[in-house]
Image (cartoon, rainbow, N blue to C red; front, side, top):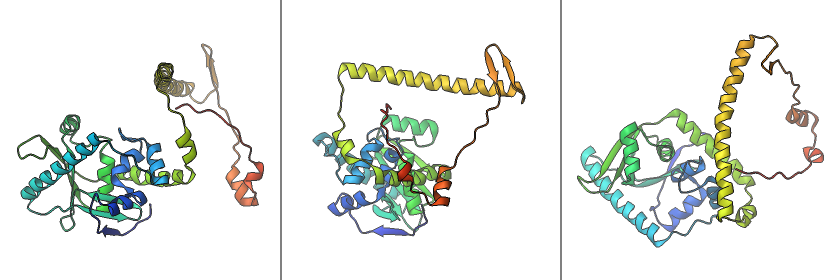
Length: 288
């Protein structure tokens, strides 16, 4: 992503204007889903939302949970403000297409605030690791990037003074930020070619036969990954033992293989070739 100056938008979080803003920008709350790390939204579902502007309709129970979260957030922000002795107003900002809605942000102090309704597993993870899990750090990394803040006060609580509460001071991580920014670049490229009709017409199956076949496939895939790693390690040991010489033994052969690779992209560029004239189409069924 190219460097862009920060723009603070005069938007009330939860308003129609804010919801419209979220449809256009790449927001921090979607960063984990974009990277395929979110438990509640798949990357493909996010691509569909951004391509069509259609967002899911939440149930009454989910909306009630959101309301509890907003109330706890407001209370927790007040508690934190009283302790740090400066305001943390809720703001919305962007850098280019990368955006964030802040639970709190003091521009002069360069501190942001992020709150999540108390969750025991999240609280336990933070306490044990003094870090955020993969499901949460993408959002905070993106918020730190947009704001230019030096750290984030991350809190998961029930919003009650003296109640359930775990806090973490989270500081920027350059490697993680790179993953987020490069992830959005790839997401934007994938968005261009995303097939809405294919997504909408894809059948959904959860019957017993499908469940069994899916479970067997996933189990086999996990085993394949395990043995693939073991095979890679064994190959490397054999290459090292061969010590640069053609070697055979115990029905195993080690020898060099030289391949000549054709740079098709360079040929197309150098000779101004229309690649479409030489392109054929085939269909392969993918199982993931």
